[in-house]
Length: 117
Length: 113
Image (cartoon, rainbow over all chains, first blue to last red; front, side):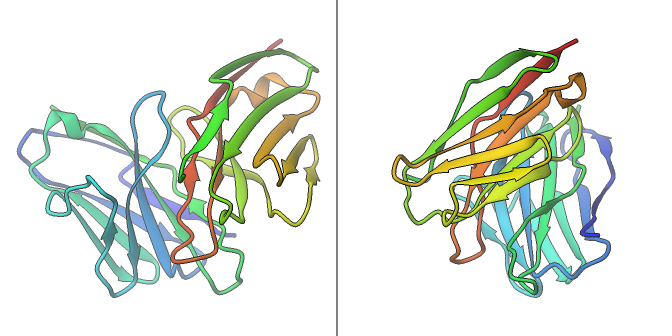
């Protein structure tokens, strides 16, 4: 149980275009989803926290107009990188949690590799 | 105060040996301390987690030791195997808000055959 999927697993896009990444909780309802980015050989950096039906909360230094997050349902959150540039190339990882069981454990997706050319 | 310091940055252990990774934190409000294992190109996977009301938790070959007074916790991997070669992250969160995780910087473990 507690499986999180991401789609696509990798994507290449041209500079100036937008790309959408989906994060789905497959067998549970995710009250909260988190989006991270990870550069090579570095730790995970939290970008934003989203709750179903409400606006995402962005971490300091993360451009909310560039990284659009939509948590439309209890099983789906999307991250849209708008007007992507090469410096946006990174590994994007989502996680999901549910407070139903009270464990507050985060379940991570497999990640999406974004390359902007 | 939100940082979690992790050491060492990299570690080489012989097969069958014990791998030890250490983390330290400052914020005494943290009350959940998980360890994650990440293989290249994959998302992190939860290995084991501990809450501050216990000093040790063991699951198979993985043990967390927790020292509340020193604000330190460590991961011990007994009988390390080549398949354990991965990057390990400690993390911490508090039971407020959305329980955001604060990650350590990571330790790249290589278990030599």
